[in-house]
View (cartoon, helix red, strand yellow):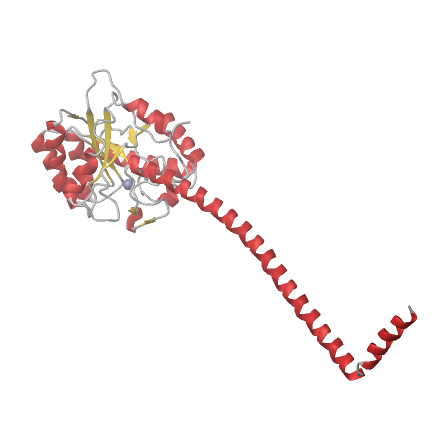
Length: 330
Ligand code: ZN
């Protein structure tokens, strides 16, 4: 035992002190390097795990966003809305630029809309041509075409005080068409502010039309439809109450010709949009526009009438016999 101990002591003491300290230094550096590597690897693993978690969360969000988009696209396709709900602005004179309807805050009951309009007593396909935002530069021409084809339609007009517009309100009624209201100002920000504002605007347009034509209008179309994304569903229901207490019914549409979309459509596009889903409903309320910038609508009108007749559909104005097409239900 003693001999072995002596050998060990001898071998250690035989290593020079300088070498020993160098070896210790190398060991320290080695430990340092290993420590650093372990630390870096640990950090990498940790951040990978964190990133993976984040990716999973983001993927989930992306999936639900995609599903939401697909849902709205389907609704948009179904109703012929061509714009996303955010893409619209209020143009000059309060008219809406871009979108004609924005199914954003007021999702409507599609089943009841189909249910209410897919049948009628005589199993006839009715087409209600409705013209919004006039009187305008195309109203005269549209009245002329309707007269030539002996078709009665519906005009949802806004408030205009000039002589030509006043005359056109009367001409619409005298020609046997239905003249409905589409608000006086067509300014979403004003009419949809409160019940008081809505009622004040309603009284203004009703008063103007009644004074001018001697006939009190009983149909109303909300600017942007009852499914517009400016007024909440609760507000629209309040406004509907107001309309009902005044003996007025509101009418939306279930066929959008898209003649007011951002993209300039040809007359042929408009005709195709009108008949794209023909057969789905027995009561087809078609959204068209007679205001300025809608010359393609004028061009499309004879084609729409001819095609409707060829398909055996009956073109009628909105009357008390019409089942109201409404986007919103309680
Ligand atoms: Zn409008």
